[in-house]
Every structure is written in C-alpha cells, then in structure tokens.
Amino acid sequence: MKSKNTQRISSVHRKTNETEINVKVNLDGNGNNKIDTGLPFFDHMIEQLSKHSLIDIYLCCVGDLQIDSHHTIEDIGWALGNAINKALGNKKGIKRYSFTYLPMDECLTRSCIDISGRPWLVWKVFLPNISIKNIETEIFKEFFHSFAQSSEITLHIENIYGQNTHHIIESCFKSLALSLRSAIAIDSRNFNNVPSTKGTLTGNK
Image 1 (tube, rainbow, N blue to C red):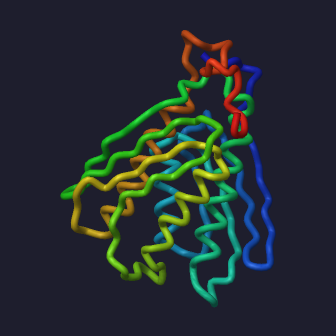
Image 2 (image 1 turned 120 degrees about the vertical axis):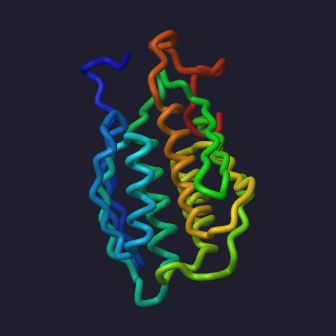
C-alpha cells in the first residue's frame, strides 16, 4: 500500500513560441479531470485517459491552432508525460509492467508498458489519412511518441483489427490508460523496492 505521507502529484508548465501548457496530475486520484486544449475531440481522448487510468488530470493548452493541431497535440504529449514521470519520483514500489487488450465495438487494440526509464515507442496502428474535427489522424502517433519519450516508458501499441477510425484512436487511449493504471500501481509485496535489478528506473541506466 502507498504511504499516507507520499503524494504522487506534480505540475508542469511548458511555454514555447507555439504552445503554452499547464498540467497537473495526481497518480492516486479518481480519474477527475478538466481538459481544455482547444480541440474538443482531443479533449475527449485525454478525458478517457484520465477516467480509465484513475489519474486526475488538469490540463490547459493555448496553441497555434490557426496553423494546425500538430504543435498542440505533440507538445501536450511532452508535458503530460513529463508530469507523470515527475509524479512517479524514484518509482519505488510500482508494479512497472502491464498490458491490456481493449475491445471497442469492432476493433481490438493492445497496449504494453514497461516503466523502464528507457523511452521507446512501437506503433503498429494504421489510421486512414483523414481529419477528425480538424485533427489529422497521423498526428496521434506523435502524441504517443512524445508521451513515451517524456514519461521515460517503453510503450508498444498495436491495433490488431478495426474499421472505424474514431474507435481505433479511442481504443489506443483507453488501452494506454488501463495499462498505466496497473503499471503505476503500488505492489504491496515489493513496497520498499525499485522493481529493477539495477536498483534504478531513472534515465537510460
């Protein structure tokens, strides 16, 4: 169990010429969230991530949407992943590994996670080259890539089958959420230890 004195909470402020982002996370929350990215469909995806991971996420982004959605979605991946990584601290006691098969109507998506300190993304998801609510679908890969890099996790996402583009994208977020929920959970049998023979899950060690 988690110590009552340990709060896995963090905040990140990220400002560039393209975006300004404020994000706060509580890893031991209830899935409460308030999301404002200027992109309603993307708001919905981050809400799904929060709801099913039980991570409280409060996120606001002002981005250069007059150009396109690329910078906003990619930079949010960086900021959100960074916030989760900070909240994990030294990662002592976490379960570390997890995987989820997520069915959503006609599609099935698998997400596998290792909170390893070695960022990596394997993305086996085919999305038609279309736009959903002013978001080009190809940018979702960049979100997951940025998220994996800044959170320092190894992340494999594969859409095994599916036809509806909305369902495929949403299943990626939901499967990530459930895998995160399990991987960041505290293992009562290993509470005082970092789950690595190296003794650390930080950086590229």
